[in-house]
Amino acid sequence: MFYTALHNRWLRLLGAVFGEFLSVLALNLFIVPLNLYTGGAMGFCQLLRTVMTTYMGLNFGQYDVAGILYLIVNIPILLYAWRTLGRGLVVRTLICTLAYSLFYSIIPVPTTPIITDMLTSCLLGGIITGVASGIVLTCGCSGGGLDVVGLCLSAKGSNITVGRFSLGFNAVLYTACLLLFSPEIAIYSVIYNYFSAIVLDRLHQQNISMQAMIFTKEDEKQLAQFIIQSFGRSVTYWTGTGAYTGESIHVLYVCLSKYEAEELRRAVHSMDPHAFIVFQSGIRVDGNFRRNLGN
Image (cartoon, rainbow, N blue to C red; front, side):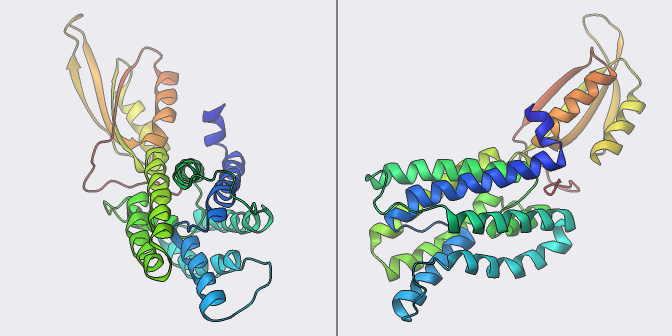
């Protein structure tokens, strides 16, 4: 069922919207009541809102303008992503950004923190937010903000992952919080964001490179052509010999993302139910390797 959902366009979009809901739910229930700041573009918008209301004397009533500011900030980001990531991801990102802003506006913030211990609240909020962001990215979508910038860097072959880029940006953001507010707010905001970024990188399957070695007695050229057409991945193959049987066997080698591994396994076994496949994750790939981050 999970495999089907990941490879159905509308179910993936629905899953991404759910991820945005889960992310905002964790933010509004565990982080905002403690007057802490989330990371990324939304954290910047929250900081800008505080500066506008506290230091510039602007009054927006009971409405939190951070949601509107978030939409405005995403306009140049989406224009930047249009050429790098393609129209499909940008449109899905726009939908998720609108959903995120809507949920941010309608999900009520408790007047008193649900969990009074700040460390526990940061850990819980960070883990849930990281899982939610991982769901959004694994579904081939993005909530906008720094996720999109990180995806653009990854798509261009940078070694900077989405989570690492977020950590770097947030270092500057939380330094500003340290200067403007109390050290306690900055420190606990960093703790929250750190756990969110770590969980995000663990769950972002398109960002995890894998290698697969396929051992089959079927036509290796047909299988290689299928992989090339289905995944846009090149394949290297050669002929080996099974030590136990002494028979010839075809070996195919391909690099792909963890997101594509399950589809490859199912496709190979549909062509050869007796095929033997070895997967190894977490490898480092350098050179002409396309990261299909927008799929």
